[in-house]
Length: 203
Image 1 (cartoon, one colour):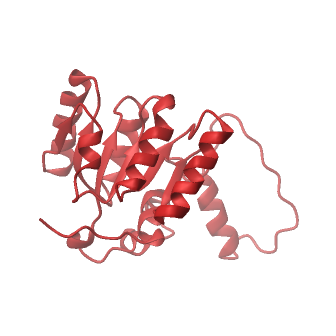
Image 2 (cartoon, rainbow, N blue to C red; image 1 turned 90 degrees about the vertical axis):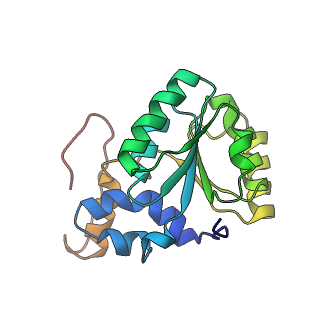
């Protein structure tokens, strides 16, 4: 068994965000993800496999290897294990109890897409188990839960990211626009107008 890798913020956060930028031609995949070889690819697991859980897992196979999937629905779990095996060429382990994922020492990070009321509990337990965390919104249902997560992040030093629009959207249009501005492609910025609604063209 390989020793657990300590993912840097650059390796994990850019890994989850950079796929869209890479496909848009602004960065190469290798540069965007910060990984030099297959041996350095992080090992992930997904907890919760309905809708968004499947989406973020599929997109993340570009930069991570998935060792496990967890969901209480055995039918959903079985279907997605088969699909992921075809996608990455290796069958992930499957669990009905997410705690078995957290017990594994070979998993670097977990992606949480379970029902909303489970987010805080699983995220905290994952960090205490030494995992980095990507959690879908809503992160918490109360302010107190948010403060508790903040405390655990500081205590454990784990990398933590919340999935949200304009930060982790598949098209990465906001990040593409930022890259264009920072590269000086549109000249000096004098005014910014932003509208939300519908699906417009990419920058």
